[in-house]
Length: 402
Image 1 (cartoon, rainbow, N blue to C red):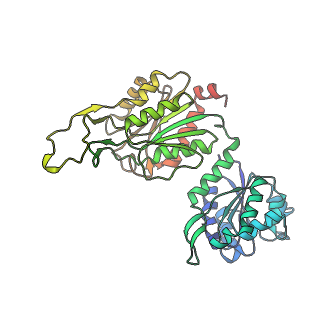
Image 2: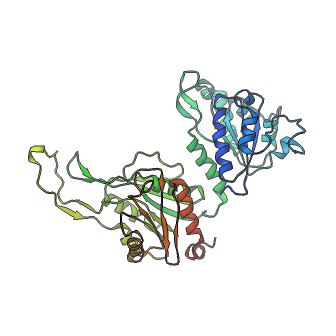
Image 3: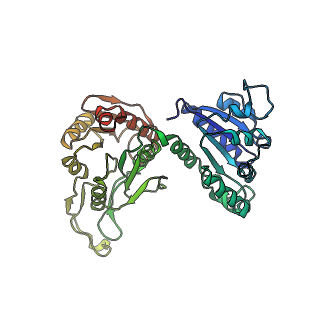
């Protein structure tokens, strides 16, 4: 997504300026051509040397600068694929709304034709001020994008709305802007994620250790590439991905029904949920007392959601997961054929750094033509690798012409 993209990061004079360092580092790591521009006030909070070291480029500070290889500095940095302002103070927002160009950054904003993404951060009263809100509304009408600030304790000790949004939220917003014309536009994706809970009584249930992180990463990655995404999720402790249609369920039957309701309007299914294979045959209406606990619990099988989809596959592309502790490849290849899948993601959940409830995974991707092993990586990175693999498959190319 980022390779070959030029991104200008404008840093203004707010206490949150130091957080721009992580965003710039992340952009560079993802191979974006990253240019930093700073106001004189921003230089009081974080030095241009820091940003030069992270970006690998001279930092634009002075509109009259003859350094850095620029022809006309504010015009050169305006020629970009995305213009990010982080943090966006009340001052830079007001300047942009009024069309002022009294320093390098404001002049570049006036000159750019790129999408502008602003991440406001300021005191709660400044953000709530009618002037600031009117300026934001005016800029929205002109096509500027805004990342809503968070609520909480501010640097001055006050509480309220005005702190810089979480960096993961900012990263997601950047990805979505860059993906607007990307290769998955028009593709309708259905992702399942998390565990299911099968009730024994009003207090107890049968479940598993799935955190939902892999499924949520896949939903975010597909949305970032421009896809329309529906996420059917079991109970997890994760924030809802922005721009994704989230359907929350609790048990396997609810997930089965939700998936089938969305299936007709779906092109690609990525079934990352760890659906319980069994449920208690009987569910007690009241909490089972310890003194009356049964010696055994009768179980009955849940519907195999992915297998049922495979039987009515049509022209859809189906991706499954095989979480195993032994005979990994043999079991995964069997599921690939039995469930009529196009791709299966196999992982040994007993391996350190892989499987449930961790931020990393170690997988092998298997399709009808090839088997490819991947080293340990973050689930967010892996989500991109899985979508890249799908994008290269003949079935995907033939279906979407991409």
